[in-house]
Image 1 (cartoon, rainbow, N blue to C red):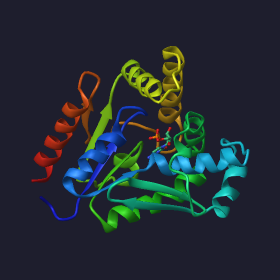
Image 2: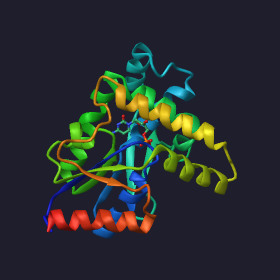
Image 3: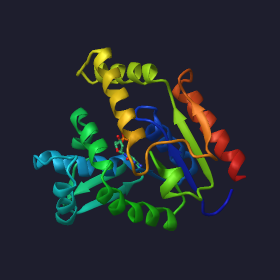
Length: 225
Ligand code: DC
């Protein structure tokens, strides 16, 4: 396998990008970077200060005030630190998803994060997941995957996850939220979610986690051998 390489995984929310990328990174002994978590951290900072996440005049000064760091632990994976405090759990609250999507559409936020993400991939072999990794952040990635699943299947999986956590939510509401965020992430002006021309499309709607993981590993091994 190549010594230094990068794998870009893009796709809509809830398609399983991060869970799969994390598992595959462990098997390949490379770094997994969940870029959505960085946008979530900014979204969370806006939420906790009561800011309007769509207003650049409020979010641009926020970026100058806060310190965002990532810590990578072999066992627990990526941790997000906001001003030195571990916010990895808080950023997963359902209300933060739309905050993250809102701040991610702002030019100041995208400019702020671009170099941070590229810098990580320059230093180490990575599997990086997000919305614009293959199209903008790492256009020269060795392998680009567009990981997707139908909105209905993503909503079904999300409902199951919420029930298991003891915080069930109606399927219709979950599906509506998924469609709303997909639309917003795909229709913003800068770096919208789209499939890179040279990406391999992997639809996991009918695949189990193990089957998806195997498909992803096969694509990587084939491409990087
Ligand atoms: O992957 P996620 O659901 O945790 O991402 C949260 C939001 O962050 C998502 O709705 C859009 C934004 N995002 C982005 O714009 N670009 C990325 N590379 C990753 C996430």
